Image (cartoon, rainbow, N blue to C red; front, side, top):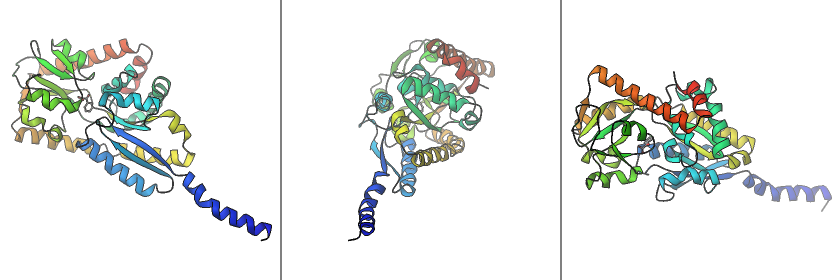
Length: 319
Ligand code: 173
């Protein structure tokens, strides 16, 4: 064989190996239960990403809280046990307190991409959590207090309420006795009467059958639920520019679907009424004070928890 022929043969042998080396598979876990709408939408996104990403980038969905417990997903992403986590800030305050501040967003994810918010979040997430914040995929969604005992004013004295860090200071400011649990434990706690209520967004009660054990929803809602895709920063940096560009583009497209939540939340509100969940509403002045109190307590805690970044985040998150 001539030398040039040998080189061509060698190149042909190596080509598939080189192409294969360019395909990376990332492991992703969810902090939310697998039967939730959140995870269904995430799985659809993964399916499309994988279909178009063949030969370059693939995501392998490992599972929900049975694979990695809800409040451990953040740490697993930070340390690189998994590559990507599907979670909310309240679930990884054990990595950094700043994570929970995203619930105070009044500006949209799209606005935060333009006003420097997205860069600031990524600066903090990189520095304090070794993470890249890829995209926010739930927003435009208030949280509510759900109860099995009737109240006629914002006073939770004598009531035991299931929380995550999202609701802690606000519910405590109304004298609630609070108990932190992952979403996966709420149904049993309600069934056993261990709790008199819980904090949760306006949607996705039905996914976990909580409507069976819920009598009242307190209006108005407060804050803005955030669910995001977080990635181990070293892993993110290890991708080729093409892979990173593809992942960023897909994540941005996913974030671009967030208008969905506006109509979904309307239909979920109706579905709750149809399921017999009654609303507890305060008069206009009390409602206004209730929401103001939530924000006041939320920001006070954010700034106390992060004197450095709390005020900076406020500039890009608040309106
Ligand atoms: O209540 C919760 O578990 C919680 O903190 C949360 C945050 C974002 C979306 C859904 C739930």
